[in-house]
Image (cartoon, rainbow, N blue to C red; front, side, top):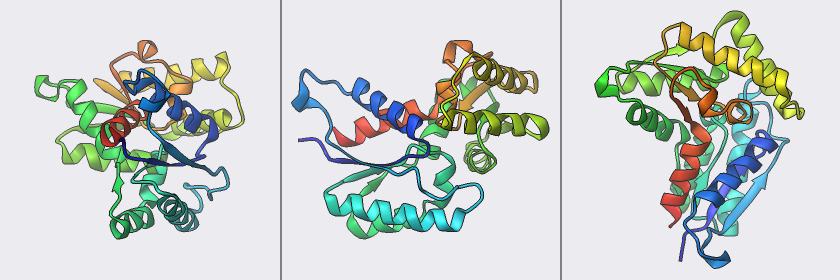
Length: 229
């Protein structure tokens, strides 16, 4: 039997629902019984990871503990930024003997592999919040890759688009805006891109990006299927 997946979600709700759909779609199943059992805590009331990180870490740890008590054996969190506040989650997983899938590490590994690090793709642009960008910068530098990040007005525009998705705005203007930010990273020298925020793929498809795009939500979904089956 497959392991039980526990998902710490709600950051934001639409991105979490899209992530669950990816897990289902990527599972090689012939019928219902072949799919992964998922325990979900979709909690949109987690304190803001950008402005209240300490409070967020406490709540995330409590969510992990509840999922563990309910029978989860593998924990995943489809929110890149919140991985900066994953200390309590890791502590719960260590105490309970559970697996925790590090979304940042898995995506950094995938981006390096996907875009041919050995063939010269040494600069990867990251579409992420400030907190998520710092996580990816450290992870990519540890893998010998330079990071290109949004700054100034582009960073402000990105955050506006992300919070817009949380309000339900996934219209054409928002999509055009995200394509423009991806283009800006490409023009700044990025030879590949990471969708380092789970709202990004709700606005930007891989084929619309100016260079190869690694989707962190897709990477995490694949890792969950691999860990649970």
